[in-house]
Image (cartoon, rainbow, N blue to C red; front, side, top):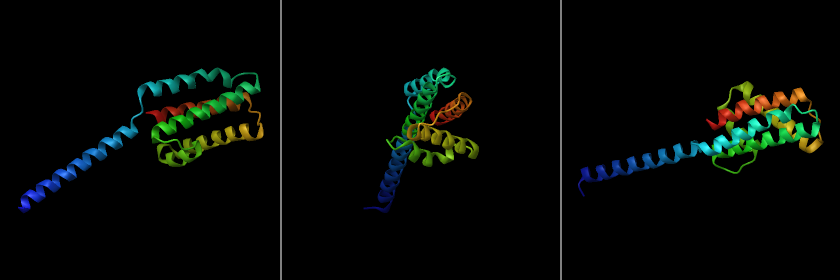
Length: 140
């Protein structure tokens, strides 16, 4: 074969590989608008629960918010990994302060689930704020 033909075929194969890689990369980063809206609606529905006078309602709200964080990260990374594993991957998505705050509220959730921690109304509302703002960042 002529070297020009081989070079032409090689260039075409490389272009095809680049196009396929770009398509896979871009599609894995795009989150379906319907799923995004569904998660954000669920987050908004939990706002009132974090201000409840009943501790069990606040605790339940924090666990649900953490589940929505986990689901958002799973959609972002197109996987079924745990929230903690995906948070480790997500370090570059956030400022240092936001990342630390996310880990803090995730640890509060763990404390609620494993140690029956009673979260105060103020702490629950602060956690809500951290969850909401960072879930929005993940789903962009």
